[in-house]
Length: 76
Image (cartoon, rainbow, N blue to C red; front, side):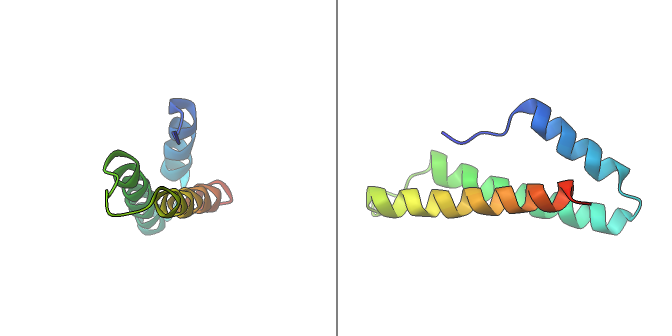
């Protein structure tokens, strides 16, 4: 199961709070929320019409999206 630890989440939120460009910080926060929500929905609401391998692929892609936005935030 994929999860973001509280320490990691705290670090991301702290980083966002330190961004001087408030518009950028809000945009990044929204993107982070959207990506983690999509991943969470895939994990908790598995579509029975999907094969297990298709579901795993969607979860893997969604996890990569979360990883990418986390990296984007950390690189600022």
